[in-house]
Image (cartoon, rainbow, N blue to C red; front, side):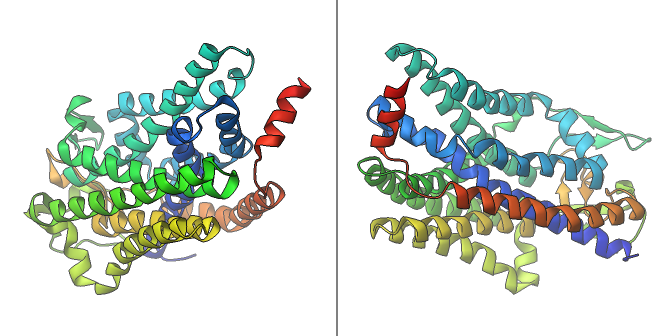
Length: 378
């Protein structure tokens, strides 16, 4: 059996991989949902855009479910603290996500302009709100969440919903929204024909510029305006899962300390900047396939930057830093992590193969002629 330290690190990497997989796959679904009403000027154009994501959105959400499952099984204390303390915020995300299948199901049931416009706006909310709130949630990790562990190591959340709307968290929401809008625009430019594709390329270029600006502002704020956490003294990476055994202190710029200690980590923000710039350039050149690939690298770069900055923290506490949950002291048992790792090595290739097969089968553009012919058939 692998060492406890290696298993914990492996599951931190797997959790990051699942988040990146979710951003790359379901991210373009959310991005298209956020912009389809604006780049589609008629009902048939909007229907073409929706048909580009309707067959794949539910399969793409598997990455989101796997991420929640990984948090539950590999980091049970993280799951308990976050899902109980952030219940209202997560409820809003779930409501917004539920609007997507409902919107897809009911939008075309009635040929009425107001009926379809209503469901179009519902689908817009279902794309925009989660894309924004995911970034807000990530931003609050850097700010720290107001919780502590009692004498039985039970998480006690002491904050409220509106406390999560800190200006820095809202800025991170803009990073996430612009990132996913860029990704969705690149996908739309790849999957539909003109004039929607031309509008998507223009939106994608603006979104890439917004991502660069918001990402830069968030990085400067983290470096010079926000107190981060760092562990004081030794922490046994193979020790028992008890967060209260460590000492933690706060300091300005602590969230970028890992980048100074390990210069190779700067490759992550470089990947984010390079991916966004390349995406904009390829969109301008009309090379939508390359733009989508570059956007995918940008998603990975942004998420890796956040993960590297937080490491080894998973859920920092603003009210009791010692209660902060880390990779080394909030995990499940060694045996649990090992058995789950075997399951991942068996089933993850199957998930990837199935995903690749689905996109191969559904390759090609959605044309307006196809949508009109399908509508006339009814």
